[in-house]
Length: 377
Image (cartoon, rainbow, N blue to C red; front, side, top):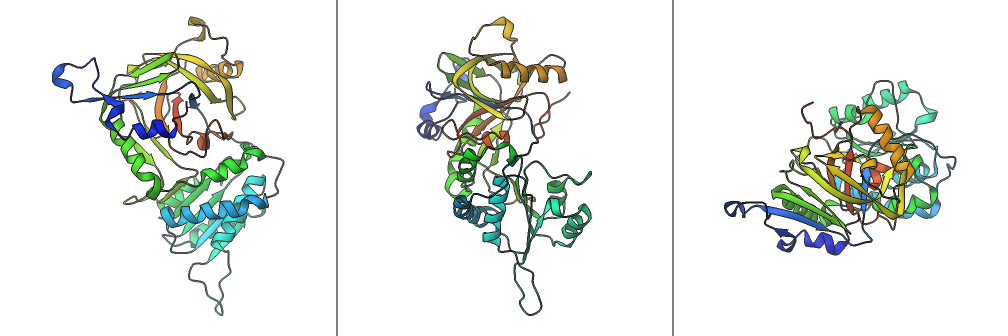
């Protein structure tokens, strides 16, 4: 369910906000958020995190200059490195190799010597050619304020060492690219284009969206022939736009471009939605040209047996079965995420879920666990 540019523009104005008809006259100063979408715009759901590898490991040379340009923007507008840096990468897939080459062009790895010192030295390590001891030793030598770039075909593991979290604890800036092996070579350009998103250009829209959602007492999502309502206050929206002003931890997982929240009362979500994408049991995003309907009642996905939609893919039913097995039969609907990254969408999909949920559109998460919004039980 893509939010096209003109639809997102409406979020900045009062025309998309109206008083909820369910409120008493004394409450009409509160707002209700209505998101409308035409027949070309559908919903993308996000569920899990994944691991895989890709057989192609050669960098795509034609994409390196584009990636380098966007990386310069990330570093200048968001990260602002002022001390030494480290690139930790693997060469298991072409996208990983391409990004490693691009970061190397921008950061220019060097080996400082007494005769040719560097004010901002950079080192580069191939994860698969090194040892855990060597990598951890390199981390230990980094000063507070240094930068580490993690470029991963899957997700690096060093025993129980949670790399990004541990680096943040040390005050080290971190830019992370994960699960790149899920992305097919024809999608590399879409992923690299999506790296262009910065708080200077996109921040005003993101904050306007946050203000509308934070103040809404009712949210209505309309797809063609369906409507869903959230009759609940929302958790304060969080921004993932590359603005780390005033934050202790600088950096995160890229690409970025998202405003996300969830209802304070998860049971107040009811209605129907049209879907076009979801992760399958192989952990890859599937997109479908013909959308299909789901129903939500009191915050839970309604069993398929209660309604018929011949367009519902079997692979979607399979992933729902997996969630049910882990969650005692009930599938709860949680995060309400508004992606703002126009380089991703039905016109430019990528198979990796964390990246694709940044697409300019709406996504929900399924399942009880959420790492940000904590609920009792």
